[in-house]
Length: 322
Image (cartoon, rainbow, N blue to C red):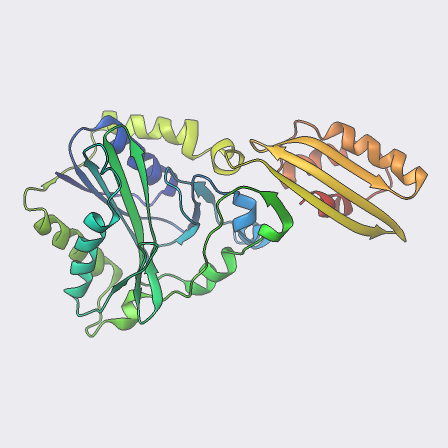
């Protein structure tokens, strides 16, 4: 087994490194990393339904999509991420216990009492400290999770907002749980750096034959290409999610406007904007006609709306479309 601790905190780069190590290496891997503040959604989730979009944009927190399923998580410099990539036998490719137990033992080595939940999450005193997820590629299994050590839980709770009531979709919903930081439960204080070094050292000793490894320059170029083509793109991070529909109705100058839009692969495929006022209806039909094929993203939609003349403010129309 090789052990890699990422020297960078770029979220897209580290997510792309996971894919590279899974698909382009052949040996077992322990990969650990810390990311800059970011939101990471599961592969099969509707990004907009999982986050408080206005808050995320205001705070300039980037959003990324990972390879594995499961729920949305918040990363920052107080969050340690672990990833095991192993060769497995057919029929036993996904084995959460196999990779959760070493992490539990490491935490118990710090005097912590850790419980494993039904969804393979870890908790202390009923408060969640990590969630886990997996992804299969041929005979190789990727199992990864987060460890909340000293994360900003205020920002975490503001970023992650269940907005599924606004959407009709088959996307996977996150299960929200009360969380806590590991640092609050330690008998002896330690820094995030000390915790990261301890966890990597413990797991390295646990697997005995682990060899410390750094990506070669060629591998870094491969990972950078993955970032440019996938993990750093709007198409993957927002557009990849499942098909969804949004219905809205508002009052505009005393008149009712109803909207019904359909989004597939991040693009608006159908827009219905109707009112009980005939004159307003004609204006709405113009806007509806130009939105097909446009990214379901506020900046892109706003640009199209502003390109058309009409007496409806863009903010009014945006409230119908998001």
